[in-house]
Image (tube, rainbow, N blue to C red; front, side):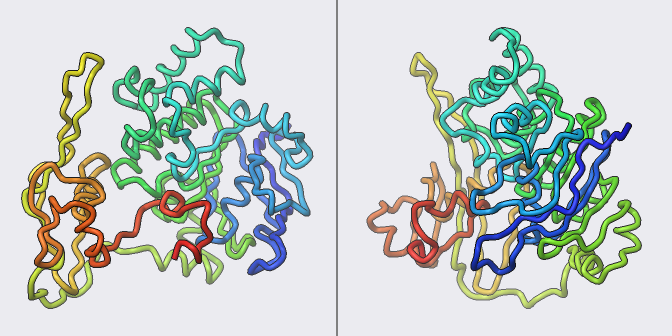
Length: 385
């Protein structure tokens, strides 16, 4: 009897007319056995996520599979009804998405979201569901599981939100776990913890893992098999060490050659002149109040300082929750600092009201981490520009 959990045979998914090519995915085949991890790598637009959403039955309505088959433990997913796919999702296959803020419901507590999954797929009473949620929250190493149960997604760090998504994906011990670049938005320390957690859960549950990534370091750490995709087609596949150490195809060698090294470039001349952006003694304290109205301060940033001159690049590094984004948001006045001085050129802007700040905003622009949350979904790209 075959131990294959997921089998894809000659899968093709057509793009709507007017696309840059006819198929998002064309002629893809793969097999993942229980307890094994297959990493799918390739640049943006190679069809990795389309393949994953096809397996989950979450494919965009504009796309349609027009050839091949997808079998989950021998059952055809392309022929399955919408009801059957809902039954399989969560119970037999789970997915960890790239951006937890778009995967989680912002108006439901994290506990309620996991409870909704259990209430849909089990007949457990509320007390048993709550106990299982707390157990899994503790298993995915979330601090203070009781507090996490009550918290909303925006109240958690990026790493904590991703652990919530992982908890939802594994709580029913699915046979197949699909991970769509789940560590891309995380710092390296949290990334390593998440990868270790997924590997531990896989060993405990014997799941097959389809892991989508563009990070060759992740591939080297967790993969058993590797599939390289380009423009919707499979370029190369094989055992991890064969693909990484003895690549046959030029495109695979190109991907491996693009992995950033740790050797710094040659030193550039020291920048001179006044700082275009600077902050001194910048701090940010959030105040929450309990039901009695008592203040509970949280110091998110304390005594931070920097100065950036023309032609200079300054990197801010640190783990999730270290205050990097808080500092950046204070510097560009997306949030108000509690104390400190901020200068855009010669202008002190830390305490300027928005009316006087608006004419100066073209001096400082920002590229956000997640484009899905940066764009207005009701406007075209042209209208936004």
